[in-house]
Image (cartoon, rainbow, N blue to C red; front, side, top):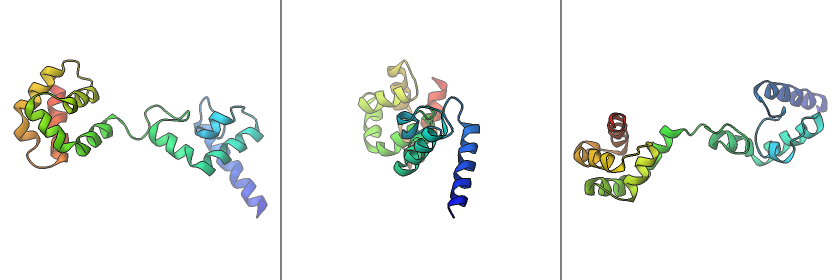
Length: 147
């Protein structure tokens, strides 16, 4: 049984080494921050640390702990999450043509002219907020592409 675990760990480390560019065989995660030496013992400890604390999964998802800076939650998902979480407040600010939620939305879309963005959203308020948050996401994506 110990021999099977050893070979499983060796295969895992070998697979990770092929995908970990500047990192060691254990890849990214808390272990890569704590154990930065690239020898077998340190990488084994790094992999164990990553597995114990689940930091590698978190790091890959959110782009932390030496994992890629994009992560799985990309800007599109950030925009969608923001709109869904703030649907009512965003609707109110868009109707007014200004406000904190519109300003934050403009930042998420990398819009430099917040006033033009707010004005465009305000003019299309009825279409954007006609039904649900997903419709709002789609409509705002279309409008932001024009600005």
